[in-house]
Length: 208
Picture 1 (cartoon, rainbow, N blue to C red):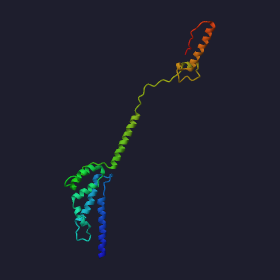
Picture 2: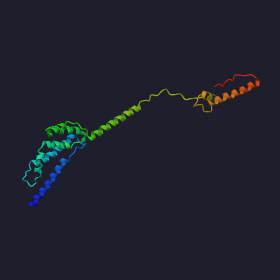
Picture 3: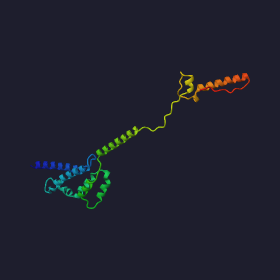
């Protein structure tokens, strides 16, 4: 009989420790809503509060009785909830912790009014904004480019007339090497003729 009682006490002690650790170790998960975290914490706390409230100093299993004063305290419940919250709202936690006679109900009502974006919502918003920016970029790229008048391609009238089988594009008559060479050749011929005839003649440029 004594062995059965000892085993029951050990099992209850182990179970109580597990439940106690679940309260102490609970932390807000950014994937969840804050209201879900508070309700989860509330459930864990109330389970232990019920177990401690029915405990007695005369029971062989005394640990719940030892924690009875803790789980009867609304201030302790509020403090442990605040300790489970993320650093991103430390300013709100600090303001609540400095209030005199802080109760769990006050903390509960204050936190339930907060709008903390979850990681899932933040990722969705980020993806939406990124897609929105990319969409706008595509719209901008679809706009016709505003350019000046298109320049006409160059074509040499001299080459077109005198060298119809050769390329005449890429330059104009005043840039034509063939025309310049022809003019220079004609000038030299007239210089020779003038010297032979003893008089100067004004050289006539080659027609384009």
